[in-house]
Length: 330
Image 1: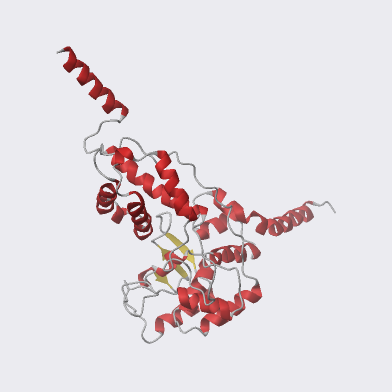
Image 2: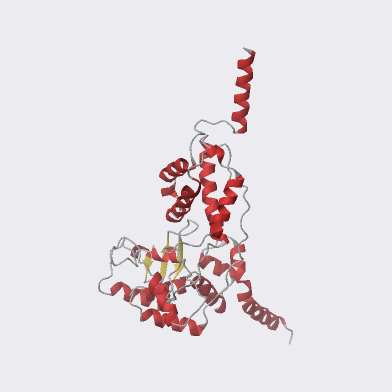
């Protein structure tokens, strides 16, 4: 009896400490598969998370959850960071023998976060005794690029987009430059969320999950109206504004057309996300305040918008000078 009590106390202690758990013999691959079945469809960007979890399945999927340690995860992340992107993931280039490209620290951190989410989920079900990814140090991320289009570059880019083999490229890039929308948000835009009369669009599938109404500049509205009236464009109210030609239910893939347009416009060191920064720069040049810029871009945090503080310094100085002139006593 004493031995039984001692055994029972040990089991209770182990359960309290998370050492013993029903189903603790599950492998990481099994946990990822079940997590993907139950949770993945509910996530904001399931395709990206699926890519992350696919890598973790190949790398550590054979391990039992109870054998997954912080050291094992940290070593795997080192491998992830050091390994070049596979050809199908690396941006295509016309230059033979181009150097390999690697995942950025931010991307590596997203991989770690995806694994951590699975382990947290598994822990709540008694499958994992601990979250081995939680305390793996995050990679230091850069503060962000500050690459904006000059007026000359903007003109050349839009002209190159007009000449593109992809008829959707010019209206899509025009919308991105006008609204500061993320590429994902714009490519998921539907005609039912476009109000050309009021000059506004509603972005629903946003990064932070919130819908937002964004003003549309008159020139962008004109371009979008012409695109809507173009022969061959799907005009169903629920249809995508920029559908793929092969399947109207899917967004168009403009990556190749985008790279060609950049080359034709002689623009270097410029990424698609820099269109968003260029929109913020244009707003600042027009006198918009940081709160206005943040509202247009859909920032939840003021801290995120503060990266554009230097862009509005000229406007702030002008406002101070105006206030000083008005307060002078004649």
